[in-house]
Image 1 (cartoon, rainbow, N blue to C red):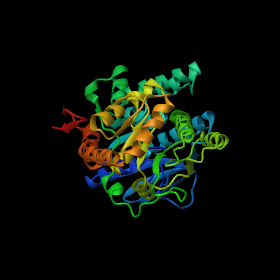
Image 2: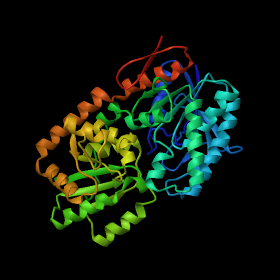
Image 3: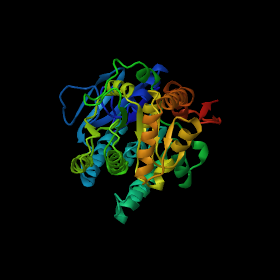
Amino acid sequence: MQVLYFHQHFSTPQGSAGTRSYEMAQALIRDGHRVTMVCGRYSQGTTGLSGPFERGQRRGLVDGIDVIEFDLDYSNHMGLMQRLAVFLKFAIGSVGVALREPTDLVFATTTPLTAGIPGIFARWLRRKPFVFEVRDLWPELPKAMGVITNPVVLKLMSILEWMSYRSATRLVGLSPGIVEGIVARGVDRTRIAMVPNGCDMELFSAPERAWRPGSVRDDQLLAIFTGTHGNANGLDAVLNAATILKERGRDDIRIALVGHGQEKPILKAQAARRGLDNVLFLDPVAKTELAGLMAGADIGLQILRNIPAFYFGTSPNKFFDYISAGLPVLNNYPGWLAGLIEENECGFVVPPDEPAAFADALIAAATDREALRQKGVNARQLANTRFARSKLSSDWVRWVTGAACRTVKLEAGYLTGRDT
């Protein structure tokens, strides 16, 4: 089967962005399918193509994937209007690809929501099966965050969301809240499968080398956050906890924030004003190098702003990377991930907006290293038994390619459908 796959922020493991689409494309190829990946340029991603752009795009084979890359640069430093402009340009270019490329099945994944536009055109103008993967609920999340307040824009996004869901032959949601959000829009639950982000057990179990930032001693607890430094992440919570650690004289704890984003310059300035030499700011690193940093760290930080829409409506890559590496996780908001951490005793769950509780958890981790080590063992076990990417990608492939079949037999658990 020929699969036409749209993901604007596609990256190989050589980039510092999430690699779900790369891994799922590889799973399709292993199953005997052919994949054409349509993407744009992303400051944190690496598509694997290096040749010149001709007429706004370039094309080539990357690890068995036929990649079409548009010359549309995207960065987390962009403002809202700049982002919207790039999203729309990518959607328009993608419609042309969707209408002319040979394909048996069209797959599109968010974000952004506009990723669904080429799938809509392929579904109704070419009568091709269309599978839509939802990583975040739009416009619900940006509305809850206060990022988008214009009622006209929100209405247009709501219409596009509805059209994408109704046009899709099948859908994939990455968390329980996302699935429920799709159902709330009137979509039959039997058309939706939950396939969360997965754990790359091979990459994180055997890094080339374990490493720490040069200023962090081996006897200091190293807590790391890896990901975008944006409005949604609420990393001021980390600085507030670090301030309390500083006041308590806990020089045995260091926090490393790894990544880029609009908020990073602000966070760095705040840390400098407060004299927080216990917080380090690192540039993004490739996944292969990130595995080494996680091997050298002691605990991973899963941080988000205290917004109820996040509680069950996200499936963060970093959480699954942490537990793949056997890192205990400190989580600062309620929801399904908090439940997983508590049920499996693989980290700490602290209330949102309570920096003292955040600091107390880090102190507990630094004080009882044997208990922390056991939480890491539990994290690795959770990754292997419930979220191994090898299992989830097989489920995903069956569900996606089964969109071309006439009947579906739903099974219990995360997912899924098997063709009959």
